[in-house]
Image 1 (cartoon, rainbow, N blue to C red):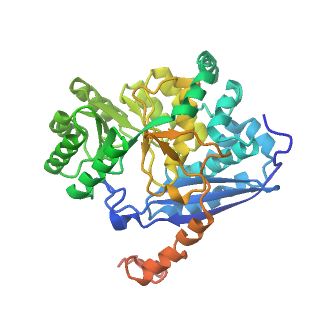
Image 2: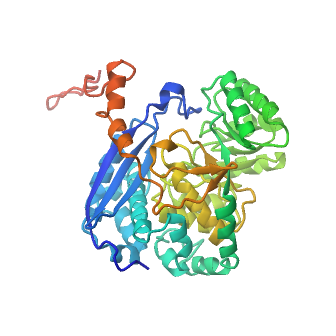
Image 3: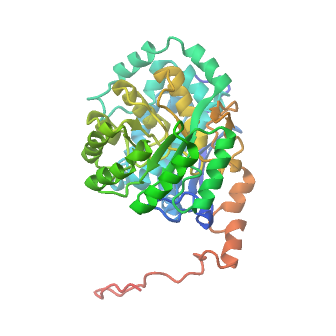
Length: 467
């Protein structure tokens, strides 16, 4: 499974707080997050050879430091590991990482801790692919089903999918895999764009961007909704008119609505024929999603969610409850590659297409690998399947995505495409990088080092006073 010259031991782990001031031009703005600063906790795993693994977990600004601290708190589980042993039974290691006896209490397998698990796990899979000198998608494609399945922790999902079922499913769908791989290498995987539909954009900017994307050949567009119904109707009407009746429109509410509100709001948007409504309500409300899906299917509108689904258990229940028509995995919200693979396998069993959430920092770079594996080894179809694409920060990665004819072309370089450029890491590290120092000096952002504390110390038996 692993080459004879592979690295033998992990000797260290570093993590950095990397942020981009995207709130300045409202990139990423939606109904819940009006001013995101796209960020990531960036992990490098060092071995006793020259090989390194690069991984990350995406956030949108404040709170990124919490993920960085969580990574540091989990580092002791990783450093010192013998690499062959780690990858020969990654599922057991992953369970150990997510079951650290005290840190699990502030999860478990969710929230900040799980974002940290994702950053570490993504770096380890990047390392594994580099050891094998393959892009990650090719590593996954070439793994025997038993080895791939050994990376997954089946605890909590065995009532829906067992190890044996997963292996059988992969073996059953092997036929034609080589042909599908050639097809992907030639044509790539189809994508859709969200880059023209951010909620904070003016009609003029939306019009210009949509027209630009149409000229480039794009045919699938997503727009953010949920803040104001009349504004959503106007914007959807504008975009539908721009893209015409033959192209595809999706809408995304980013968890803004209550269940009944979601149904009512989407009835008003139904004339614009959206393919799906994404995140119509709380990401944890499985039965709420089922209610919305049941109400909207007669209107020809599907329900998509998963960007903020905490773990494989939520996805298991969404699938069991027939609550989603499109499964939207995220490469960082769950605990990295193996947990995402578990969701792909469950979705395949239930016959629900996977359309990954992407954009942000590094998400496009990562999910292309996962979706290529799914097509070649599992689903064998691109019907109702697309990868989201927002390329605004892609130039910060050494091996960024290659979009051709509105499709992701398979990466050729070893790894998970997660390695950032040195200049980016230096300039965008928060709060000491040159980009942030300049913004603080211009008064465009508040310097956290100069800001007064939002709390004051108190003496014992005195009430805490907040400013």
